[in-house]
Image 1 (tube, rainbow, N blue to C red):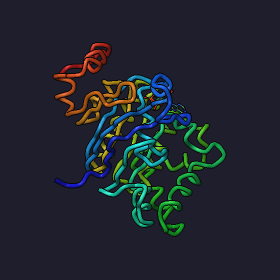
Image 2 (cartoon, protein in one colour; image 1 turned 120 degrees about the vertical axis):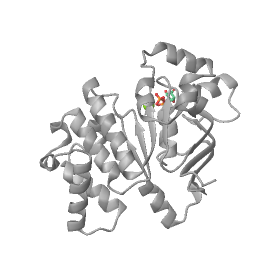
Image 3 (cartoon, helix red, strand yellow; image 1 turned 90 degrees about the horizontal axis):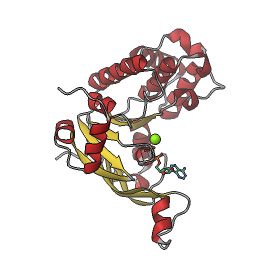
Length: 265
Ligand SMILES: Nc1ncnc2c1ncn2[C@@H]1O[C@H](COP(=O)(O)OP(=O)(O)O)[C@@H](O)[C@H]1O
Ligand SMILES: [Mg+2]
């Protein structure tokens, strides 16, 4: 068995300074995540689906190292992320990238898009300016961003264009895992299809792994080979797409399936 890229074991999160000795009701109210085990292998596409407030973003931020868990451990390539040596820490920072739901707020409104991409690339690599410029043009092309747009500010772009820039930014450092947190939820349906097609293409082309988060089962079904279902801070079901959608075991998954009009193969 090869070591997964990312591995979460027994991960929990309480917001607002929750303590173990709090009374159970208060404890439950502050618990956003509990007992989460999740492995993501190289090249995998894992969909995380669940209703709003079920803990998806909390899990994603912990996986990306943006948020510390209250308990449990996170490993990158078999090593605990709290104890990474400097070189491994850089590899983790570069290896996992995050795409947020709302690109307009994720991109600094005061900087031109080209400068935003250049800031990111300088943070991740030691490339000199001409090499950085070449790399930015390369990823812009891959993400379908017209280089003329790089002189603009985020608010001057449509939602779809801005999300493409955010995707380009995520690709700059040649990551191995991209965490996509509701990346199409803020977009019109027609744009959603375009962005999903782009994401599928990028994954195939670069051998990326995805942790793809959505409250929309149909979107996850389209892009992900493995599916985890979250409910009230726990993963209540996990397996291949065929197993989870074909023979859902958790009652919650069956309710989700019933609630969403889906195309059956
Ligand atoms: N920064 C925070 N402070 C306090 N509670 C939070 C914070 N972020 C999220 N929560 C709570 O944690 C739970 C899970 O939220 P979240 O991870 O954002 O779920 P999802 O992404 O599935 O909508 C929710 O009850 C939410 O209100
Ligand atoms: Mg969320």
